[in-house]
Length: 325
Length: 251
Ligand SMILES: Nc1ncnc2c1ncn2[C@@H]1O[C@H](COP(=O)(O)OP(=O)(O)O)[C@@H](O)[C@H]1O
Ligand SMILES: [Mg+2]
Image 1 (cartoon, chains in turn red, purple):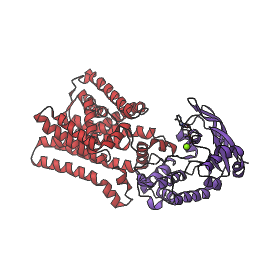
Image 2 (image 1 turned 135 degrees about the horizontal axis):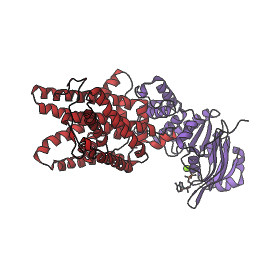
Image 3 (image 1 turned 180 degrees about the vertical axis):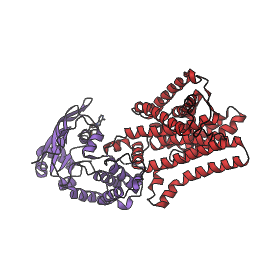
């Protein structure tokens, strides 16, 4: 039900191992899929695994905001896209080193999330959803107006990121390994964060803000920090995606993408961070398979979502309120 | 004699035409249990909300620990040492009892931003939380979800959440309401054991409890203070007998 359940298990290494389990399962599953693709010599397979892991990272970062912080952002494509633009823009200035580009993608996306979050956090529930959407649309149009970086159409990145000039991401397999590693590290770090004092305050604020206030804590700064962390991780996912397709355009920040990320989170369940990984796998695989047969596959996905939402009725209501009892 | 912990100075509050608080002045002294009684709808909960900072009075002042807190919000007043137990139990249902108390302990500690160490594996924090649960007799239930606790247990849990913060003043809005006889008795014993250590403003309907615990009693009728005094004076006061105690006897 809630992450509280994993946290509740008393200390000791057994408790820790249990808490790690979903994360390890995710990482091993991705690694196995990649090994199979690599063994078959399928670069398409490696591409798909890397792409899915990148979207899973973005979905996990959103799940952290929604499930742990009660912050239902409908603008998560914005930090994702900002991370992608970090690769493009840095590349135009001949900066391609991963050790610069990754922190840059994280920091610029986190900065955007904090700046817009400082205002968005003054609202609740449906208003929060709408204002995050509005900010994402703003940055979408800003990106489209960057004529030096392709404007509406976007443009190809100069090259994939490097490591001190070494073209380590030339192979799709290596890129997928990086994506899986980042996903794994993010899951581990977030698991840790959720169980920490900070995480306890964040979750309490989601579940019962009135009581937390009466206990002396106004969770505003904790939420702002959550937005920075969630946004920053989405920025990392954007860096991965830009490397993958070697092309960046405002479409990355399209509100459809925000919606799809929410779908991933809701499909996988907001209670556990690893659930979002499952949601990301389902959506990207459906997109890739059904998308070849019909443009209208999203209708089918829509029906799946309606079914899931009905089964998780209470969950969605809490989602719209931005809190849960 | 030292300054009272809490001083209310001619508070007024209206909801539209309804004057729910009318010129209320009272004080709670150090270590005192001050009971606030009055018929349903007299404005007790509304007054507690103004003390806690959840409602702003239309006029008048709230002084807490010698400081004018009228313009401070709920969280700021709580940090100064004001603990509130709500009339309707207010806990995090999806957290265990232990986690709820840990939330309270962390919220009032200096460290709410620790991001690495799991909160519940902090020995000192855990010991503090378990101790608070022990005091209210809930230690056996610490791993149960708060949402699964019986009504009376949830009241006790909320009290534990306040106690773990070592408040300077406890606002208790009908802590015994809806508890079973045994639970009510245990809570009364617990409050008796707190007597003298922490100032308490106690809103309570059960007159036996009030007369056992209170050092002074204020009677609120239609939002105004009818009388404040020692229990024996209040018991004998004709206005009170007519307006309040009499009503009880008639029921
Ligand atoms: N937010 C509000 N808006 C309008 N009227 C209110 C509000 N809160 C309480 N009241 C009214 O104020 C009066 C006092 O309520 P309350 O303080 O809960 O009384 P008590 O706790 O003594 O039973 C009641 O008549 C109640 O209906
Ligand atoms: Mg009341």
